[in-house]
Length: 402
Image (cartoon, rainbow, N blue to C red; front, side, top):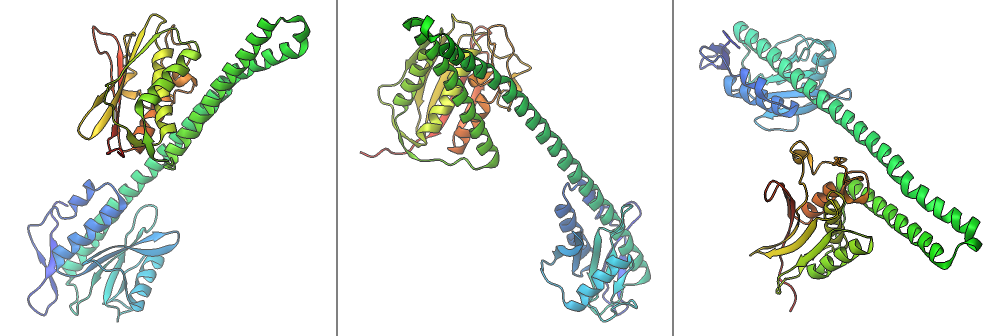
């Protein structure tokens, strides 16, 4: 604070005297972002300036809690604790040198703000009283500390409100996505099942088979939606459980590519994998889900004439799977948010969202799965002649059993 000076222990018996020239010790507090950082910083600054121990106690749900101390300590004696509570409750100084708990080893002043006291700040008596000018400065330091704490608390409340608003937005988006994207396959299943029940005797075997295939296809789409929704919920909660085993990447790629072809993918899918492709320690089901989401993304966001290539690169400590297409690529405005939840690519040739779910979760889930394996995921677009997209999934490599 301009014009302010710090306090220090005096060499004589008169107490604690002022020292000139220190104008920014508490000014540093304004640059601290959190309540804990401000409390630690203030206690450290006061101790450095005065040569005396300093403590800060903050109100938490009606109880004073020791938030910071320098030198570090986690206890106060009963008399000092009572003095701190009195200073906070009555919004007046208490402790050593006052009429309230004068035998306390600490002197406390409340941390006042416009919203009321946040707590108290204390300085050790050390058998030496504060001189009037030093007491005035200590009050000023307490005011500055209170202001910094209030700013940090307001910032925390603002962030909490922002997080709550974002959570509500995500929840509403999820509900809207589920209600819309579940309705389409459910309507198709209901229509096909009703036709079989009402007109079975009038339908030949081929027509009945087509309706049953339609029911199966839409049910698989619903199952994929549910699996993705459960996966993103577990990822967000940090509760994604990995069942590690030795995974043959070649088999995973073949299963994912075959499943896409069975579901009627019109694009050319070509897998070119190295002859020597080591196994990895991973959760086979989750690796397949991540790769399946990436491939579905490529298929659903590109025209029928697109070629999708899957290859792998073996490195010293990792194995990378790459899925690349020669489609139109990702628009620049979408690219920075491609791994966010509920981000959808809107194009004529991409009628539904990624992963076949319509919820925009495919890339977010793939990212969560890969990172849960302590791997990495990377996105490139365009990759050649202003077109194409490549997603690289890198998994750590471990030595496979002989």
